[in-house]
Length: 169
Image (cartoon, rainbow, N blue to C red; front, side, top):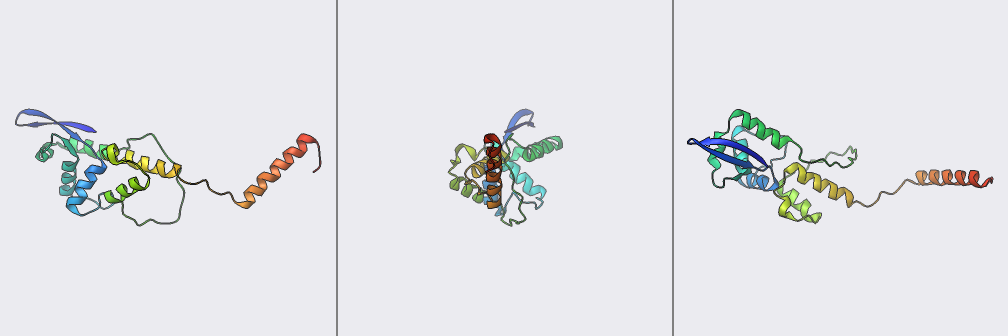
């Protein structure tokens, strides 16, 4: 969660923002566009997303317009930053996945991986995506070894045993 302070009619107001699945869902439901794409967003679309990220104070979407340029940069840094220390091994693949990641697709992954929506739908999106990656990785069946690798392991074990017991085979 990111907290920023603005001044509304000489009053200090604390704004709390969450870049979360819930925020993505709200924005995508209203705009009918996927948010997590490389397509640049207009200033208006970004302002709308900041409004969807605003969790406190409720019902005061207009307060987003009081953010100064430095706070907008801070908001972008928060959105682009990683909120996790975890990582998973990445398989190199020449396949290109053209699937667009939408909030519904992420909800599908949560269902498929049996991850309950609450409380993860309010987590920072990078943290949630890391949980999905880790759960998916840990649920994969062990990969089968190539027969040549198995044969090489057996040969190495046999050679070690020959030396250990002083035999020729």
